Structures are given as C-alpha cells and as structure tokens.
Image 1 (cartoon, one colour):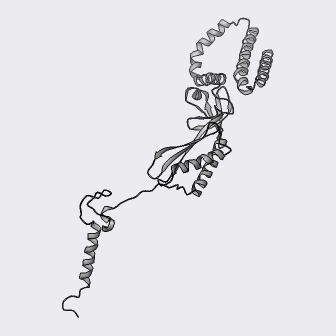
Image 2 (cartoon, rainbow, N blue to C red; image 1 turned 135 degrees about the horizontal axis):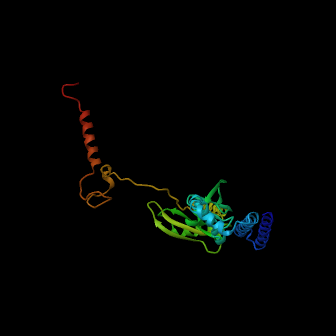
Length: 293
C-alpha cells in the first residue's frame, strides 16, 4: 500500500510540472492529478487486500458492494453529484481560477475549484462556498470570459439643450479617458424622450475586470458632469407641473379656446368670481350700520 501511495504522489508531481509548463497549473493539476492519484490509491488498496487475504477476489468485492450499494448511493448522493460536477468543471473549464463570475446573488473572484465545491471571494473580501452541482446545472455569468466589456450610462439633458452639442461633449470625454478603449469605438445615442429629460446613452468599452470598470465609470461620469455644466447644458432632475384650473387667474387668456384642459367657453374662472365676491363682502362690512354715528 505504501508503494502505491508513493507512486500516486509521484504521478501527481509529474502532472503538476507538466501543467506549470503549459500555463494551466492549478486547473489541470486538480482535474487530472487528483483523479489519477485517487485511482492509483484505490488500485493499491485492492492489491493490498488481495495480498493480505488470498481468498478475497474481485468477485467478492463486487458482491459486497452490491449489497450496500443502493444504501450508499442514497446516503452519498449529494457528495457523488458534487464530485462528478467538480470533475466536469475542471475538465471543461467554463471558468478558471482567477475569473470573476456571478451565480445567483453571489458575485466575486474564483479563488479555488475543488472536487466538492468552488470557493468564491466576493469583492468585499468574504468567502462564498458554492456546491459544484449548482454551478454545473445553473446559469453562471463569467464576467472575465473576454478581455473587454462594454459599459453604458444614461445622461439626461434638458429639452431646450442642443443634442448634438451635448453628444460632442460626451464623446470628447470618452476619447480622453485612459480606461476607455479606443477600439471598439465609443458612441452616444438618444434612447428616450423622458418626462423631464432627453436621455443620451454613453457606451464605451473597458477591461472586463471589475476594478477597471469602476475606475473608468468614475472618470467618465465626473468629466461628463463637469464639462456639460461648464458648457451650459442643463442636467435637470425630474419635475412635475400641477395646474389647478379652478384657481387659474382671469388674465391667463381667452377661455373660448381649449387651453390646458380648461373646458371651452367664456365663463370667468372660478378664482376671479370668488375674488369679486370677497371684495363685495368687504365693501358691505365697511358700510356703517343705520342708526350709528
């Protein structure tokens, strides 16, 4: 048994060296080295049992495993499922150690891929342990699968502002930031005529690492705000205009024409009639009563 253990460790060491040479050290060593090491140790165990007990044969082992195989299968279902999923993840490599992924509500950097679970280091420095079966059967977003990633942000300008002037300013900002890649080329498009703003969407490409994305967005938004403000481009916040028709002054216009929801007609607004009534009542109050000095 000791001889087989030494052989298994030697084989794993050779696989690790080959993996280092081809730049796939951790994943290849985990995927192949551990499997081969486990297979050699199991083989050594069978040989050792056969040597210690000559009457023991492979047929005896198969019959013994057949008796408790069903029970063991149910007892270790999750373990076996995670183990097989881990092997498939290590061999297929949908993501690698160092990639930044998002799975469900968890997002971070892949710290280690084991045969049972994958260790994820979140951006705020915590560790999340995700079973490999979940990673294999559910959707996983690999943020760093490609070297570059597109960012976008919506900027609202006033309806009275020049769209082309604002577009030129934002494009100038995107062309001057170090974190914004020149290729693919950044652009600015109109995407909505909102309640209070004309919405311009700035789109640019940056490195797919989360740190580079945050830095580039910080620089872009800071410069856009400063330069748009300096150029006199309005960046309005959401506003609402509420019109109370029964409080509209009589000087607002001729009511013979439909205006802002006011019903057609020449009737004086209610506010004006109320004002005249109040003035008449005040005049009556100022008149001395009969029989007083």
